[in-house]
Length: 229
Image 1 (cartoon, helix red, strand yellow):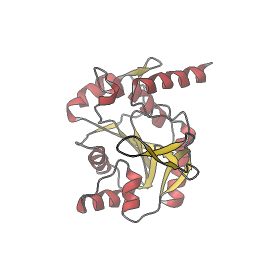
Image 2 (spheres, rainbow, N blue to C red; image 1 turned 90 degrees about the vertical axis):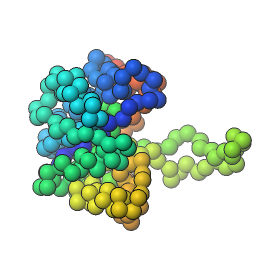
Image 3 (tube, one colour; image 1 turned 180 degrees about the vertical axis):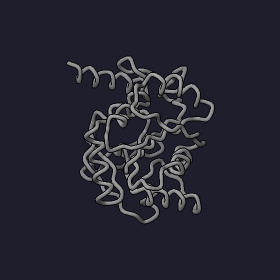
Image 4 (cartoon, rainbow, N blue to C red; image 1 turned 30 degrees about the vertical axis):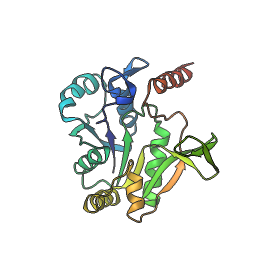
């Protein structure tokens, strides 16, 4: 069995909106609704767990889940003060019979079913995998005075995306290890790496963007329009 853990406990400060960014709309639907539909449409996903701020749980049921038209109702779990805490909380609610869990940013609504399927297959093969896209811009390193001190070779650099997929036993072990050793990371693959595990990569999708700023919202709208025409 495979499950999805959707992390939607952020506040969206950088967006500068009057509400959390997962409630903003693209193409007439809330961002989080689109994300949930993508996983709900995948037959290989048996359960969806969503972490949200505890004070937002009722609102999420009303504004996201009630009108989403999902085949199965997601399980809402209170998030924590950090993303890492939210994921830990969600992992505790995963069915024991699950072999693979996909951990996905709630504000990446354009993830495709094809990418979800490839992540499941890769996690079953290797134990841990993440989708990535190549870095195409020139990268530089600057000093405190904003003077260039190095141009970084980009040939081996990639940008990580979600869903990040793991054998459930492995990612639970990594999060427990992180708690015991006071380790903090911005994504789950980093915890597996820090624990000494190997994480494989698969090709991601350039349209699978994380909506963080108002400009990202405009890009997502453009990608959706391109799909419709």
